[in-house]
Structures are given as C-alpha cells and as structure tokens.
Length: 258
Length: 252
Image: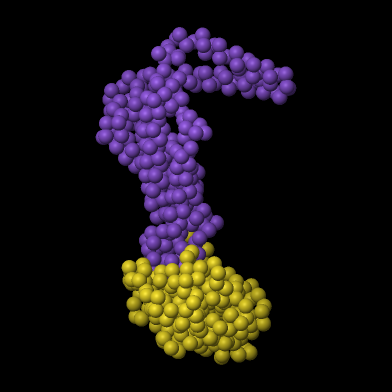
C-alpha cells in the first residue's frame, strides 16, 4: 500500500505546509529576513513539481520508442552542454562531453534492456536514463576539467615525450590514468559507503512508495552498478576523445589554455 | 646536416616570431642560437624537430624536407634536451628506457648502464628515483634518455640555465665529448655569450625573430665593428635596436 497516492495525498501535502509556516515563523522571529524567499521557494517548488508530474504522466503513457529516444537525446544534449562548460579550455569540450555521455548511456541502457533487467518502457527508461545521464554528466565534467589542468601543468613532460618519438596517446598515458582515477573516485567512494552513511534516493523513494525494503534494495543495487558502469564508460570516452584536441596532426601540442 | 631555408613562423594569434631565417648546420658541428629573451631562439629550435611547424619555409635534414619524414622517425633522429630536465616519474632506468620502449624494445640493464656511462653517470644511479637525483645529474639523465634513441642531431634548449657553474662546465664538456666520440651534431640555444664562445663552432644571433648575424663564433664575437653583437655581448638589451637582416658575417 503506497504511502501517498493520487488526490488522497492533497490533505497531507497541505499538512506538510505547516512545516513551511514554522520555518517562515522562525525566520520572522529571528529577523533573518528570509520569509519572502521561503514563500517563493515553496510556491516555485510546488508549481514546478506539479508541472513535471503532468509532463511525466503524458510522457510515460507513450509507447513510441522513437519518442523515448528523442527525450533521451534532448537530456544528453543538455548534459553535454553543461559538462562541456565545466571543461572549458578543452577543445570541443561540449561535443566531447555530449558524445561521451551518449556513448555511456547507450552502452548502459543497452545492456540493462538487453539483459532484460528493465523493459524498454518510457516509465522505466526515462527516469533510469535521467539518472545515467546525470551521473555521466558529473563524471564528464570532472574528467574534462582535470584533463585540461593536467595538460596545462605537465606540458613540458608531454613535449619531452613527443620529442622522444611518442605519439600523442603515448605522451599523455600517465596523465590519462590520473584523469580517469580522479573522475571515477567520487562514484566509487559513494558506492562503497552506500547504506552505511546514507540511504540512496531510489531506495528511499521506493520504500516511501510502498515497496518492501528488500525489493527496494534489489533495485538500488542495480541502479548503483549501472551508475558505476556508466561513469566508467563515460569517463573513458571523455578522456580518450578529449586529449586529441590538444594535438595537431603533426603531433604538436596546441590549444593549451594559458 | 640541417639546412634551414627562408623559415617564417607565425603563431595562431598572428604574431610573427621568426622572419625569413636561413642557415646551415654542418655534420658534427656545435651551433649556438643566441639572442635576448623573446628573440625567437627556442621557437626556432622547436621547428627543427617539428614541435613547432616550420611553415612557410623549409628545414632539410640530410637532404630531406623534414615535413616529408614521418614525425616519429624525425624526432628519434633529432633528439631534444629541455631547459628543465623534464624527466618522467619513476627511476633513472625508466627514463633511459622510455624512447626504445615506445618501439617495444626493452633496453637491458647493461645497455642502460652504458648509456649512463656515456653521460658520465655511475651505474648505481640506475634504480634511483628521479626525485632523488641532483639538478646536474637530472640533466645528464635527460641526455642519456635522448641518446637511447641513437639520434644524429641533438637540440639543446638552454640545458644549463638552471645549473650551477660546475655542473654547467660538465655539461659543456659532455657535449664536446659526444660530438667527438659519437659524431653528433648539436644546435644549442643559449643567452650566455661566454658559453657560446666556449662550446660552439658557429653562432647565429637572433634579434626580434631576425638573423642579426651568423658565422664563425670567434669571428662574430670578436668583431669590434659589429655594434649590435658587441652591445649584446656586453649584456645590453638589443631588442629595441634596428636590425640589419643577415649581418656582416652571414654566409648562408
């Protein structure tokens, strides 16, 4: 039995508003001058979430796989743009991030659907794709920023390697190892401590939705492994695509930010 | 050995750093490129192994336009030692083995020790971490690392500028030895007039990307009639002075 369902939930949402009134009351009492902000945040979050709820209702009802792919592509494009901004200074950063996120998402979702872990339905693929893309975006951003910094700070070593006859890939082998490590460590760390320090979102959501803890754990484990795989693949794709822009066809270092 | 013809180099932002440079380097010669800071010495050196693109203009290595030589092959033939030793993380042996390892060849310990001996370093340094060698030793390891590729030309980009006088003199002696023993050709960037006089056969004086003079080192530096050279030798900033391209000793 779900804890919240349909319009029955409305009185409970209103009851939760009491907490907002308490927060606003504390703000007024302590003269922190945040009552207005609390009001705006409350109204905005209410409107935004109701709107997305209706959009998701409509989207989840679709059975056209092309529409699902289109939505995933839009999400990937936005994620690539965002991660690319984080990696400003890397040549074609947005394109690199977009392609890497798309590749990571394609491989991860392809495997999950191919192995029949999830069915290819909008109601499953869109939220799962959103998690994969969001996670890959964070990793790509980290990898791009670190790649730029590594190439900038070790340019002399890279040129020394090139001067000894190394190809661009050989000249940045050590740098790419460090870049991948730094991009993946946050995901690995959060996977390590899961369940000990924090209960992850999927599990919490499912338990609140009425699922048993064991069913929630099962899904959460799939999600964690999926995110780890997507992060690893996207990080690798980002690093392997990203370094190329720093080299000319004649193996010269170029476009290094000052 | 090397023949530079009408070389001009312009950066991506449109700044011209080298203007119509021509000179030749004979086999087994030691040529110094001298000039004030920002005159284009290092830029010129880096075009000789295509770390910078030599265009327009051409650089010929043993009668071959270097842009027609596969770049990896060119850089193995024309080695380079940088201002900072630019060693890689790991041991001295890891560094010495780097070039051959790129071709899947593994130098034996004996071969590494022989290379260290070429540059005057003892065998016990082989397994030492590069973080634990002195500045002078590090620069010698950089020479050994370059020699492992068996180059015919070595480009030196101010290799002694961070070293003390004793280590500097040892590197100068090393370069003369390598020329005499292995028949190597050297192009050496320096801003040190005394060093050019000690080590080189010929000198090219570069000012604002233009060849201000080029010729036999002794003649060029001793010519009391060439005002620009004399003022540079006295430590004056000559980058603001008018430059007559070619100079009185030019003999391309």
